[in-house]
Length: 377
Ligand code: CTP
Ligand code: MG
Image 1 (cartoon, protein in one colour):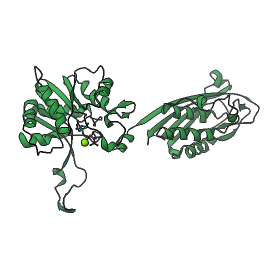
Image 2: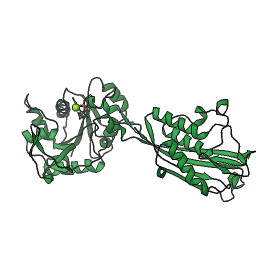
Image 3: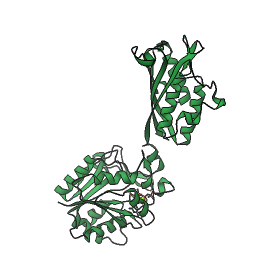
Image 4: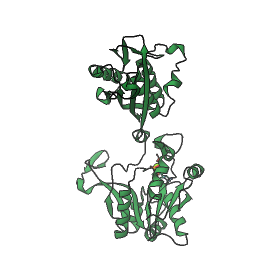
């Protein structure tokens, strides 16, 4: 059994409004196009993929997909229907055309292996397989702005892709398309010229990315930061998370020595793929002498905002033999939450000793490890 995937990617992505086709937009560092293609190329039961791309995007698509096995490119058309038709024609010219094709929008990068597997199973059994989500909202038909019909909810579905078809049948259906036909997907072509297509159940996450906000929602980043400061300053307090905590001895630092804030800042900067705090606030720069680290943290938030990120949550572990920190943790959380503009419940701070081991155990310094999650806004 020979199965091919057809991926129409030849649109312009106008509604998303990026300066490039939306299929090149990155989600967690990987383009929409690469994700979608990878979902099919990793499958052993899919022998090849035809990607329909526009002349403008062809070079970039080829570059991004270098090394993907069994990938053919065809020129897209002015409409999605034309793009799919071109791909079907390319397959019909192969020495051994496929038995089945799975047609899937490039703009649906979250298609799961489960959905693809169900599509294959269904198309083998029924000759067609259309991914469909049962409607969770009430849907109506309107006539000139008034409700004219309320279909029973169990009878209403939203269609997604992939849509699988026996190759010979979908090819002949596409070849019969009349000039005044207007189809928004392949099931419509099959329904008109072959038979009512069979449905199988889709997934909410298999969403088509259409508007800019559909993309923003999806990017999250994590980062880690670590900082250590040595005891030895002639002070009777340390500053942690903006709180002054009584201590036999202070921490040596160019700034206020707030090792907690420093680790958090590095975690945030690292999550955004930016340079570390040493780069932004060098300890050779006089303006940072005795600097209030909460103020520096505010500036880090500004840098994140410039990169299009907001803080999701932060979590930090303080390792210190002394002083005793438990009574101050609630206040530290409050301070950090204020500056990061997140709820206190999104700031986690734990404190523990190092059981007398190593430099921390000997009371020579304090180390903090922090973790941060960012989301794109
Ligand atoms: N598509 C295509 N050829 C076209 C138009 C669309 O191959 N002439 C593809 C798109 O690249 C996308 C899928 O069909 O993967 C679904 O189309 P849509 O979400 O409408 O994408 P665009 O047409 O690119 O977006 P827009 O309508 O906002 O311009
Ligand atoms: Mg479109």
